[in-house]
Length: 185
Length: 182
Image (cartoon, rainbow over all chains, first blue to last red; front, side, top):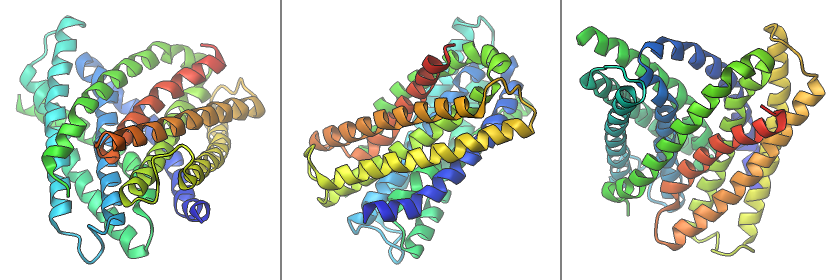
């Protein structure tokens, strides 16, 4: 029963996400090269990507439990449970991003002995954290809605889907934010 | 039922810890990257996939256990039947996924003209062995963290996925390095 349902709903997605991972791995690798002149940023990129995944998958996991507890469903999506979850996830995104920015600044100055603008690093990481947080929140709500409509168990879907889409979105957001901040400062 | 402050309080300290570990692991990989790129490029390509699938399996398992504990269909007992069945399913699913992807990576490597200094059999067996050991470990971690957090009154949904993916990223690399000897 559990076996059949999980294999049917999760296995194709897992394989698809794995194939996605093969390609994003190499694309991310080539994008990372652009950050070599800002060593502090380069060091924390794996951390930012992992954290984005952590915040999103925890969000998806909570929505899965909320569904099983009867707190949320396709007909009653926009309620207090969802609102508190969205605010909680976005608050985590902002706080953690700010901490990452300061951490990146510290490693650049103390370990790599290079001068870098704190405002630039903090701005880049915060901007990337907030935009990717907003985008992934919308994506999560979309995914959850589709899963409800199809009658699937969200627990089978949200983890892999959010982790894979999260990796790509986050990397693109860091990339875009860095270019934008370089233009501004 | 849910309050955003609770979500932030449960998540924040753990996320900082995970960040530090991920940054450290990132540096470890960077150190070995040149060696891997020159001698075993296929395995360099395999690392994010091994870690990613492990993290995905662990977070699916964690999400199921958390829902089960919240609803009451999973009991806080190491003999719980639903937990056993979910863990076994996760391991079976992971093994099938790793099997498919090991063939996929080998083929992509072949088409891209990567230095194929490893036979398909030895690549597949190293990849599968690393993967199966990893999901075994992550399943254990997932059950332990879900049970302990729930017992302590912390929502397992807040903590299991971050812990499992961070341990997955760390041990995926360590187990693979151990097998290929870099």
